[in-house]
Structure formats: C-alpha cells, structure tokens
Image (cartoon, rainbow, N blue to C red; front, side, top):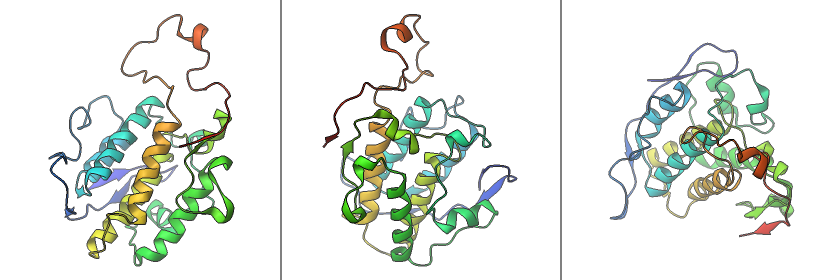
Length: 237
C-alpha cells in the first residue's frame, strides 16, 4: 500500500495496482527508477511513497523518464512538505473528480478512459501559462516558453498538493488504459506524459537543486533570485 496526506485529511490509502506492461524497446531501462532515482533517504515520504507506487507500473521509457524528471522537479523546488501551504497547491478548478474521491480515502476508479481523458486534459490545460493556450484549447498545448517567468507560477508547485497530483492522476489514466488493453504508444496519454516532462523541465531550467550542492555566497548577488529567469520574448519549440 501507498499512503499520503492531502491537506488536513488523515493518511490516505492508495491500493497498489497489479504490475502492467507495454512493449519497450531494447534501450528501455530494466528498472523504472534507475539510480540515483531509487528510494533515497533525503526524500520526503510523499515522494518515496509515490515512487513505490509508480515503479509498479511498467509504462515504458516515457513513463520512466517522467518519474525521473518529476523527482528532479521536486528536488529543485525543495520538496515542500507542508500540506496546508496553499502556495504549493495546484488549482482545484476543473480538477478531475477522482482526486477529490481519493482525498476522502476512497480508491479512485477510472470507469471510462475516454471520459477521464476529457476532464484530465481540461484541468491540465487550465494550469498552463496563457502563452501555451491556443484557440479552442487545442491538445496538446503549444510548447511556448512564456515571456514572463512568473507565468509558470500556476504550475511550478511542488509538494503533495502540487505537480504530484498531476502525475498521480495521470498514473491512474495510464493504469486504466493498460488494464483495458488500450494502446498507449501515440495516444493522448503518451502526449500527456511528454507534456508534463516538458513543463517540469522548462519551468525549472535555472533553479539550482540545493540538495545537491551548498549555496555559494556570491550566487544570489550575481544571478538574483535563483527561481526567476530574466524576461524574454515568448518562444515556441
């Protein structure tokens, strides 16, 4: 079992799924979480519990990469552990109902992957900077770096109520699709995995992982706030 705490609720139980697989190419790692992304003593419980759950889903190379990038994301943001601090919460507007169900200690069940996809994508799009949102909220969102770094603030949130919720709720979608025998390669699930990877990397490009090295005395004076990038024009990739 995997337990986590959401806001002020007591410890919540998430039953582990049976191991699921999709074909992987020869370059795929044998472990979902290769070193140094196996369980580490310096990671908080919401991360280590999540990793125990995520490694049960053999979702292919892209899923492995997402888990790795998410751990980097959490480390760079300092792995905030106070579930009451709303500065680290993703917006609940448009959020899938399954997350609310989970908050009441009930195992969420994705009855229809098609229906779940509609709600999950709507929520994920609502979290993005305006520069990523095109006409009619097309999917997947455009890979446009915002001109103002502050535009990332809506999604650059670590902790048990931050990006973790996007990753765990995507895991439910992936799990349900694999369980139903639905193809993942080239699907909207794969697009969602790739997009979370891109967002996690893009919004933390210049943030130094303070768990990997001590801060240098002159770092702040030379570069300013390590979490902020200089203003620049919006750039699409």
